[in-house]
Image (cartoon, rainbow, N blue to C red; front, top):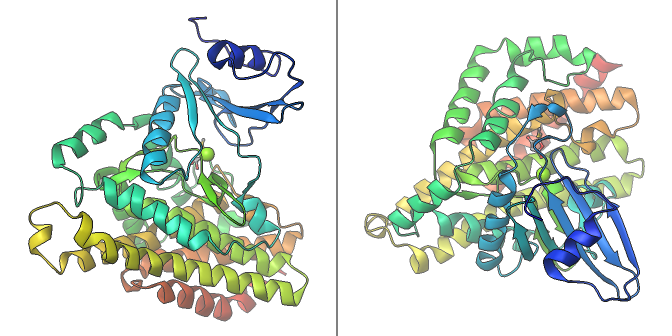
Length: 414
Ligand code: SR1
Ligand code: MG
Protein backbone atom coordinates (compact mmCIF):
# COMPACT_ATOMS: atom_id res chain seq x y z
CA UNK A 1 0.00 0.00 0.00
CA UNK A 2 1.57 3.33 -0.89
CA UNK A 3 -1.26 5.71 -0.17
CA UNK A 4 -2.42 7.08 3.16
CA UNK A 5 -5.73 5.75 4.46
CA UNK A 6 -7.28 6.09 7.90
CA UNK A 7 -6.91 2.96 10.03
CA UNK A 8 -9.81 1.52 11.99
CA UNK A 9 -10.32 -1.58 14.15
CA UNK A 10 -11.19 -3.67 11.10
CA UNK A 11 -8.10 -2.70 9.11
CA UNK A 12 -5.38 -2.42 11.70
CA UNK A 13 -4.55 -6.15 12.10
CA UNK A 14 -3.98 -6.64 8.37
CA UNK A 15 -1.91 -3.49 8.37
CA UNK A 16 0.38 -4.75 11.17
CA UNK A 17 0.81 -8.12 9.50
CA UNK A 18 1.65 -6.54 6.19
CA UNK A 19 4.23 -4.26 7.77
CA UNK A 20 5.80 -6.58 10.35
CA UNK A 21 4.32 -10.05 10.11
CA UNK A 22 4.18 -9.80 13.91
CA UNK A 23 1.47 -12.34 14.81
CA UNK A 24 1.25 -16.17 14.60
CA UNK A 25 -0.92 -17.74 11.91
CA UNK A 26 -3.28 -19.17 14.56
CA UNK A 27 -3.52 -15.91 16.51
CA UNK A 28 -6.77 -15.02 18.28
CA UNK A 29 -6.86 -11.32 17.50
CA UNK A 30 -8.65 -8.51 19.31
CA UNK A 31 -8.34 -4.90 18.09
CA UNK A 32 -9.44 -1.84 19.98
CA UNK A 33 -9.08 1.91 19.61
CA UNK A 34 -7.72 3.16 22.92
CA UNK A 35 -6.72 6.74 22.10
CA UNK A 36 -7.95 9.22 24.66
CA UNK A 37 -5.61 12.06 23.71
CA UNK A 38 -6.44 15.18 21.79
CA UNK A 39 -4.75 14.47 18.48
CA UNK A 40 -4.34 10.89 17.21
CA UNK A 41 -5.78 7.44 16.68
CA UNK A 42 -4.25 4.77 18.90
CA UNK A 43 -4.99 1.05 18.44
CA UNK A 44 -4.07 -1.98 20.47
CA UNK A 45 -3.78 -5.17 18.42
CA UNK A 46 -3.63 -8.20 20.66
CA UNK A 47 -3.24 -11.93 20.10
CA UNK A 48 -5.10 -13.35 23.10
CA UNK A 49 -3.87 -16.87 22.43
CA UNK A 50 -0.13 -16.11 22.58
CA UNK A 51 -0.45 -12.96 24.70
CA UNK A 52 1.38 -10.74 22.22
CA UNK A 53 0.36 -7.21 21.39
CA UNK A 54 1.43 -4.00 19.69
CA UNK A 55 0.29 -0.40 19.66
CA UNK A 56 -0.35 1.40 16.38
CA UNK A 57 -0.51 5.17 16.57
CA UNK A 58 -1.64 7.06 13.49
CA UNK A 59 -1.68 10.82 12.98
CA UNK A 60 -4.84 12.28 11.55
CA UNK A 61 -4.65 15.32 9.27
CA UNK A 62 -6.64 17.29 11.84
CA UNK A 63 -6.93 17.76 15.61
CA UNK A 64 -8.97 14.83 16.83
CA UNK A 65 -10.61 16.55 19.80
CA UNK A 66 -11.84 19.43 17.62
CA UNK A 67 -12.42 17.84 14.22
CA UNK A 68 -11.65 18.54 10.57
CA UNK A 69 -12.09 22.29 11.05
CA UNK A 70 -8.65 22.36 12.66
CA UNK A 71 -6.22 20.83 10.12
CA UNK A 72 -2.83 19.64 11.39
CA UNK A 73 0.18 18.21 9.54
CA UNK A 74 0.40 14.44 9.80
CA UNK A 75 4.19 14.81 9.64
CA UNK A 76 4.15 15.16 13.43
CA UNK A 77 4.25 11.38 13.76
CA UNK A 78 7.65 11.30 12.06
CA UNK A 79 8.99 13.76 14.66
CA UNK A 80 7.49 11.59 17.39
CA UNK A 81 9.00 8.34 16.13
CA UNK A 82 12.43 9.93 15.60
CA UNK A 83 12.39 11.35 19.11
CA UNK A 84 11.30 8.04 20.60
CA UNK A 85 14.30 6.37 18.96
CA UNK A 86 16.72 9.03 20.24
CA UNK A 87 15.23 9.00 23.75
CA UNK A 88 15.20 5.19 23.84
CA UNK A 89 18.99 5.29 23.50
CA UNK A 90 19.55 8.28 25.80
CA UNK A 91 17.43 6.84 28.61
CA UNK A 92 18.13 3.15 28.35
CA UNK A 93 14.58 2.32 27.30
CA UNK A 94 12.42 4.71 29.32
CA UNK A 95 10.16 5.23 26.26
CA UNK A 96 8.29 2.59 24.23
CA UNK A 97 10.37 0.72 21.67
CA UNK A 98 9.49 1.67 18.10
CA UNK A 99 9.17 -1.40 15.85
CA UNK A 100 8.42 0.54 12.66
CA UNK A 101 7.54 4.03 11.48
CA UNK A 102 5.61 4.12 8.21
CA UNK A 103 6.01 7.38 6.33
CA UNK A 104 3.12 6.64 3.94
CA UNK A 105 0.55 5.90 6.63
CA UNK A 106 2.09 8.24 9.20
CA UNK A 107 1.78 5.48 11.75
CA UNK A 108 4.15 4.10 14.31
CA UNK A 109 4.00 0.49 15.38
CA UNK A 110 5.44 0.20 18.86
CA UNK A 111 5.74 -1.69 22.12
CA UNK A 112 2.51 -2.19 24.09
CA UNK A 113 2.93 -1.16 27.71
CA UNK A 114 0.55 -3.67 29.22
CA UNK A 115 1.74 -3.58 32.83
CA UNK A 116 1.58 0.18 33.20
CA UNK A 117 -1.06 2.79 33.96
CA UNK A 118 -1.16 6.44 32.95
CA UNK A 119 0.34 8.32 35.89
CA UNK A 120 -2.54 10.83 36.03
CA UNK A 121 -4.98 7.93 36.50
CA UNK A 122 -2.79 6.28 39.13
CA UNK A 123 -2.42 9.53 41.07
CA UNK A 124 -6.17 10.15 40.93
CA UNK A 125 -6.54 6.78 42.66
CA UNK A 126 -4.05 7.98 45.31
CA UNK A 127 -1.30 5.57 44.29
CA UNK A 128 2.32 6.32 45.11
CA UNK A 129 5.35 5.49 42.99
CA UNK A 130 8.54 5.23 45.08
CA UNK A 131 10.91 5.00 42.10
CA UNK A 132 9.39 7.88 40.14
CA UNK A 133 11.67 10.69 41.31
CA UNK A 134 14.84 8.80 40.53
CA UNK A 135 13.56 7.61 37.16
CA UNK A 136 12.05 10.88 35.90
CA UNK A 137 15.11 12.90 36.97
CA UNK A 138 17.33 10.45 35.06
CA UNK A 139 15.00 10.91 32.10
CA UNK A 140 15.08 14.71 32.32
CA UNK A 141 18.84 14.94 32.77
CA UNK A 142 19.60 12.45 30.00
CA UNK A 143 17.17 13.82 27.42
CA UNK A 144 17.66 17.52 28.15
CA UNK A 145 21.14 18.27 29.48
CA UNK A 146 22.73 15.76 27.08
CA UNK A 147 21.06 17.38 24.03
CA UNK A 148 22.04 20.93 25.03
CA UNK A 149 24.99 23.05 23.88
CA UNK A 150 26.61 22.36 27.23
CA UNK A 151 27.30 18.83 26.01
CA UNK A 152 26.69 18.45 22.28
CA UNK A 153 29.08 19.50 19.52
CA UNK A 154 27.46 22.77 18.41
CA UNK A 155 27.03 21.95 14.71
CA UNK A 156 25.50 18.57 15.56
CA UNK A 157 23.14 20.29 17.98
CA UNK A 158 22.12 22.79 15.29
CA UNK A 159 21.45 19.91 12.90
CA UNK A 160 19.07 18.52 15.54
CA UNK A 161 17.45 21.94 15.95
CA UNK A 162 16.75 21.88 12.21
CA UNK A 163 15.55 18.27 12.16
CA UNK A 164 13.14 18.91 15.02
CA UNK A 165 11.68 22.15 13.80
CA UNK A 166 8.01 21.61 14.62
CA UNK A 167 6.17 24.85 13.77
CA UNK A 168 2.56 23.65 13.83
CA UNK A 169 2.79 21.86 17.14
CA UNK A 170 4.79 24.74 18.65
CA UNK A 171 2.07 27.10 17.48
CA UNK A 172 -0.48 25.03 19.39
CA UNK A 173 1.56 25.51 22.57
CA UNK A 174 2.19 29.20 21.88
CA UNK A 175 -1.57 29.68 21.47
CA UNK A 176 -3.03 27.23 23.98
CA UNK A 177 -0.51 27.61 26.82
CA UNK A 178 0.96 31.09 26.47
CA UNK A 179 -1.72 33.22 24.79
CA UNK A 180 -5.40 32.26 24.75
CA UNK A 181 -5.82 31.47 28.47
CA UNK A 182 -4.71 35.05 29.14
CA UNK A 183 -7.63 36.71 27.37
CA UNK A 184 -11.23 35.80 26.65
CA UNK A 185 -10.33 33.76 23.54
CA UNK A 186 -12.90 31.95 21.42
CA UNK A 187 -11.25 28.53 21.76
CA UNK A 188 -11.07 28.74 25.56
CA UNK A 189 -13.15 26.35 27.58
CA UNK A 190 -13.92 28.68 30.50
CA UNK A 191 -16.78 27.81 32.85
CA UNK A 192 -19.20 30.76 33.14
CA UNK A 193 -18.44 31.37 36.80
CA UNK A 194 -14.75 31.77 35.93
CA UNK A 195 -15.24 34.63 33.45
CA UNK A 196 -15.48 37.56 35.88
CA UNK A 197 -12.92 35.88 38.15
CA UNK A 198 -10.47 35.66 35.24
CA UNK A 199 -11.16 39.25 34.18
CA UNK A 200 -10.43 40.48 37.67
CA UNK A 201 -7.43 38.29 38.49
CA UNK A 202 -5.75 37.48 35.17
CA UNK A 203 -7.02 39.07 31.97
CA UNK A 204 -6.77 42.66 33.26
CA UNK A 205 -3.57 42.18 35.23
CA UNK A 206 -1.00 43.97 33.07
CA UNK A 207 1.98 42.97 35.23
CA UNK A 208 1.01 39.30 34.92
CA UNK A 209 0.49 39.58 31.16
CA UNK A 210 3.99 41.05 30.82
CA UNK A 211 5.53 38.12 32.72
CA UNK A 212 3.62 35.55 30.66
CA UNK A 213 4.77 37.29 27.48
CA UNK A 214 8.38 37.00 28.65
CA UNK A 215 7.82 33.27 29.25
CA UNK A 216 6.20 32.90 25.82
CA UNK A 217 9.21 34.50 24.15
CA UNK A 218 11.53 32.22 26.10
CA UNK A 219 9.54 29.25 24.77
CA UNK A 220 9.81 30.53 21.20
CA UNK A 221 13.45 31.65 21.23
CA UNK A 222 15.43 29.56 23.69
CA UNK A 223 16.59 26.54 21.67
CA UNK A 224 18.21 25.03 24.75
CA UNK A 225 17.53 21.28 24.55
CA UNK A 226 15.56 18.63 22.68
CA UNK A 227 12.28 18.68 24.60
CA UNK A 228 9.54 16.13 24.90
CA UNK A 229 7.23 19.13 24.56
CA UNK A 230 4.19 17.83 26.48
CA UNK A 231 5.58 16.16 29.61
CA UNK A 232 2.49 16.09 31.82
CA UNK A 233 1.34 13.16 33.96
CA UNK A 234 -0.85 11.94 31.07
CA UNK A 235 2.33 11.39 29.03
CA UNK A 236 3.89 9.03 31.57
CA UNK A 237 3.11 5.33 31.87
CA UNK A 238 4.06 4.06 35.30
CA UNK A 239 4.07 1.11 37.69
CA UNK A 240 5.91 0.31 40.92
CA UNK A 241 9.11 -0.55 39.05
CA UNK A 242 9.39 1.64 36.01
CA UNK A 243 8.26 4.56 33.91
CA UNK A 244 7.85 4.89 30.16
CA UNK A 245 7.35 8.35 28.72
CA UNK A 246 5.04 8.48 25.71
CA UNK A 247 3.63 10.92 23.15
CA UNK A 248 6.52 13.24 22.26
CA UNK A 249 4.90 14.68 19.13
CA UNK A 250 5.41 18.24 20.44
CA UNK A 251 9.19 17.66 20.47
CA UNK A 252 11.41 20.58 19.43
CA UNK A 253 14.43 22.52 20.65
CA UNK A 254 13.10 24.70 23.45
CA UNK A 255 13.68 25.73 27.07
CA UNK A 256 14.37 22.87 29.50
CA UNK A 257 11.95 24.52 31.93
CA UNK A 258 9.06 23.79 29.57
CA UNK A 259 9.26 20.02 30.15
CA UNK A 260 9.91 20.23 33.89
CA UNK A 261 7.29 22.96 34.43
CA UNK A 262 4.56 20.92 32.74
CA UNK A 263 5.32 17.99 35.03
CA UNK A 264 5.40 20.08 38.22
CA UNK A 265 2.13 21.86 37.30
CA UNK A 266 0.31 18.56 36.83
CA UNK A 267 1.55 17.28 40.21
CA UNK A 268 0.30 20.51 41.81
CA UNK A 269 -3.13 20.13 40.17
CA UNK A 270 -3.34 16.59 41.52
CA UNK A 271 -2.52 18.01 44.97
CA UNK A 272 -5.35 20.56 44.78
CA UNK A 273 -7.69 17.91 43.42
CA UNK A 274 -6.87 15.46 46.22
CA UNK A 275 -7.57 18.14 48.81
CA UNK A 276 -11.18 18.53 47.69
CA UNK A 277 -11.96 15.01 46.40
CA UNK A 278 -10.59 12.68 49.05
CA UNK A 279 -12.94 12.07 51.97
CA UNK A 280 -10.59 9.82 53.92
CA UNK A 281 -8.49 12.27 55.99
CA UNK A 282 -5.59 9.89 56.57
CA UNK A 283 -5.33 8.93 52.90
CA UNK A 284 -5.70 12.56 51.86
CA UNK A 285 -2.85 13.73 54.11
CA UNK A 286 -0.67 10.85 53.00
CA UNK A 287 -1.24 11.52 49.30
CA UNK A 288 -0.83 15.29 49.57
CA UNK A 289 2.40 14.84 51.53
CA UNK A 290 3.61 12.38 48.90
CA UNK A 291 2.89 14.89 46.12
CA UNK A 292 4.73 17.73 47.89
CA UNK A 293 7.70 15.45 48.59
CA UNK A 294 7.69 14.40 44.94
CA UNK A 295 7.66 18.01 43.69
CA UNK A 296 10.49 18.96 46.05
CA UNK A 297 12.55 15.88 45.26
CA UNK A 298 12.12 16.11 41.47
CA UNK A 299 13.59 19.61 41.57
CA UNK A 300 16.38 18.92 44.07
CA UNK A 301 17.41 15.56 42.64
CA UNK A 302 17.41 17.11 39.15
CA UNK A 303 19.84 19.77 40.41
CA UNK A 304 22.05 17.21 42.22
CA UNK A 305 22.23 14.98 39.16
CA UNK A 306 23.10 17.91 36.87
CA UNK A 307 25.91 18.98 39.20
CA UNK A 308 27.14 15.40 39.46
CA UNK A 309 27.35 14.69 35.73
CA UNK A 310 28.51 18.20 34.78
CA UNK A 311 32.29 17.54 35.03
CA UNK A 312 31.90 14.27 33.11
CA UNK A 313 29.81 15.57 30.20
CA UNK A 314 30.57 19.27 29.61
CA UNK A 315 32.22 19.95 26.24
CA UNK A 316 31.74 23.68 25.64
CA UNK A 317 35.13 25.38 26.00
CA UNK A 318 33.79 28.36 27.99
CA UNK A 319 31.58 26.31 30.29
CA UNK A 320 34.70 24.28 31.08
CA UNK A 321 36.43 27.49 32.13
CA UNK A 322 33.53 28.84 34.27
CA UNK A 323 33.00 26.83 37.45
CA UNK A 324 30.04 29.02 38.43
CA UNK A 325 28.18 28.57 35.15
CA UNK A 326 26.41 25.35 36.26
CA UNK A 327 24.66 27.14 39.13
CA UNK A 328 23.67 30.05 36.87
CA UNK A 329 22.31 27.62 34.24
CA UNK A 330 20.35 25.48 36.71
CA UNK A 331 18.99 28.50 38.65
CA UNK A 332 17.59 29.82 35.38
CA UNK A 333 15.89 26.46 34.75
CA UNK A 334 14.31 26.54 38.23
CA UNK A 335 12.98 30.08 37.85
CA UNK A 336 11.47 29.36 34.45
CA UNK A 337 10.11 26.00 35.61
CA UNK A 338 8.03 27.89 38.18
CA UNK A 339 6.82 30.29 35.47
CA UNK A 340 5.94 27.50 33.03
CA UNK A 341 4.13 25.62 35.80
CA UNK A 342 1.96 28.70 36.39
CA UNK A 343 1.06 29.00 32.70
CA UNK A 344 0.26 25.28 32.45
CA UNK A 345 -1.99 25.48 35.55
CA UNK A 346 -3.96 28.39 34.14
CA UNK A 347 -4.38 26.88 30.68
CA UNK A 348 -5.60 23.57 32.15
CA UNK A 349 -8.29 25.50 34.04
CA UNK A 350 -9.70 27.87 31.44
CA UNK A 351 -7.98 27.01 28.13
CA UNK A 352 -9.03 24.57 25.43
CA UNK A 353 -7.54 21.39 26.93
CA UNK A 354 -8.35 20.63 30.55
CA UNK A 355 -7.22 17.85 32.91
CA UNK A 356 -9.21 15.21 34.76
CA UNK A 357 -7.64 16.28 38.06
CA UNK A 358 -9.79 19.43 38.03
CA UNK A 359 -12.65 18.57 35.65
CA UNK A 360 -13.23 15.25 37.43
CA UNK A 361 -14.03 16.82 40.82
CA UNK A 362 -17.63 15.71 41.20
CA UNK A 363 -18.89 18.27 43.71
CA UNK A 364 -19.55 21.47 41.74
CA UNK A 365 -18.68 23.89 44.54
CA UNK A 366 -15.46 22.07 45.31
CA UNK A 367 -14.58 22.01 41.60
CA UNK A 368 -15.06 25.76 41.46
CA UNK A 369 -12.94 26.25 44.60
CA UNK A 370 -10.13 24.09 43.22
CA UNK A 371 -10.16 25.89 39.86
CA UNK A 372 -10.02 29.32 41.46
CA UNK A 373 -7.31 28.36 43.93
CA UNK A 374 -5.34 26.81 41.07
CA UNK A 375 -5.45 30.04 39.04
CA UNK A 376 -4.40 32.20 41.99
CA UNK A 377 -1.59 29.84 42.94
CA UNK A 378 -0.45 29.76 39.31
CA UNK A 379 -0.21 33.55 39.35
CA UNK A 380 2.07 33.36 42.38
CA UNK A 381 4.33 30.92 40.56
CA UNK A 382 4.59 33.26 37.58
CA UNK A 383 5.05 36.49 39.54
CA UNK A 384 7.38 35.11 42.22
CA UNK A 385 9.38 32.78 39.99
CA UNK A 386 12.65 34.61 40.62
CA UNK A 387 12.50 33.50 44.26
CA UNK A 388 12.07 29.82 43.39
CA UNK A 389 15.51 28.24 43.39
CA UNK A 390 15.08 25.05 45.43
CA UNK A 391 12.55 22.27 45.78
CA UNK A 392 11.43 23.63 49.13
CA UNK A 393 10.56 26.99 47.53
CA UNK A 394 7.94 25.24 45.36
CA UNK A 395 6.52 23.41 48.36
CA UNK A 396 6.48 26.42 50.69
CA UNK A 397 4.70 28.53 48.10
CA UNK A 398 2.02 25.84 47.65
CA UNK A 399 1.56 25.23 51.39
CA UNK A 400 1.58 28.88 52.45
CA UNK A 401 -0.59 30.11 49.62
CA UNK A 402 -3.20 27.38 49.93
CA UNK A 403 -3.24 27.68 53.73
CA UNK A 404 -3.90 31.43 53.55
CA UNK A 405 -6.34 31.54 50.65
CA UNK A 406 -8.39 28.37 50.91
CA UNK A 407 -10.87 29.85 53.37
CA UNK A 408 -11.60 33.02 51.38
CA UNK A 409 -12.03 31.00 48.16
CA UNK A 410 -14.41 28.61 49.96
CA UNK A 411 -16.44 31.63 51.09
CA UNK A 412 -16.46 33.12 47.61
CA UNK A 413 -17.69 29.86 46.04
CA UNK A 414 -20.32 28.88 48.61
C1 SR1 B 1 -5.25 20.61 20.40
S1 SR1 B 1 -4.08 19.80 21.32
C2 SR1 B 1 -4.40 20.25 22.96
C3 SR1 B 1 -3.38 19.77 23.91
O1 SR1 B 1 -3.27 18.36 23.84
C4 SR1 B 1 -1.91 17.96 23.87
O2 SR1 B 1 -1.74 16.92 24.75
C5 SR1 B 1 -1.15 19.22 24.26
O3 SR1 B 1 -1.03 19.34 25.66
C6 SR1 B 1 -1.98 20.27 23.67
O4 SR1 B 1 -1.75 21.55 24.22
MG1 MG C 1 -0.36 13.77 24.18
